[in-house]
Image 1 (cartoon, rainbow, N blue to C red):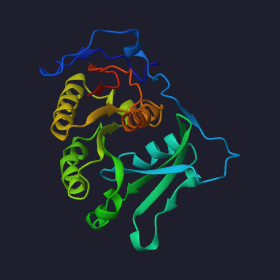
Image 2 (image 1 turned 135 degrees about the vertical axis):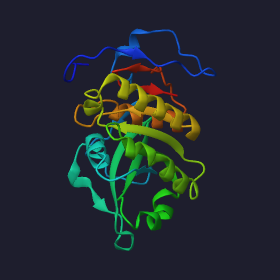
Image 3 (image 1 turned 90 degrees about the vertical axis):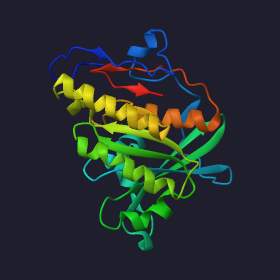
Image 4 (image 1 turned 45 degrees about the horizontal axis):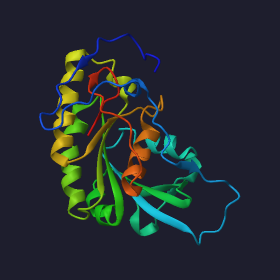
Length: 240
């Protein structure tokens, strides 16, 4: 990855005692992830009889980059649409893939953070196969809110795969190294308590955006997952 802003001195976070860090591998320094048998759907396929639709939900405070993250993955912001008039404050985007020869459509729902967000949680979270709990890496306030979002979501869905995502990694690495360390350590602690995989991401530089959805796909369809943990401060952390 090209460096963003001034160079920083990398420091390793201590691995979890119950989950030691794997041996270094050339793959660890790669921003991408090896293919997991997933390819974009051709535009000329219009038969929905063999389409499997799965729902994913995005939760988090306002102004943390949820929409930018989603648009980066889907690739076309014009696909954003209201979920329904009775659910004002919910929007969704769709992305269709081939997975082992089967067409999979991800319907990705984003919840607007306002005074009525609690009312939208049941319809937003029910039936989701994965819930992405998101926060701004440059704002500890939004990280502290993650636990509240998690508690609200789990009232309505106990089975969805939990993913904790720190956005705006490109801004995060401009912070003092000690503050980066503090935020990363707190995020790892929250992820452990949520039994969630942690990703640091950037929609602006497309860091870990596609990788997150490839991870979800791998978990759902029992596909290989070859990316290793990365606990190096100054790099986009992946912890599981």
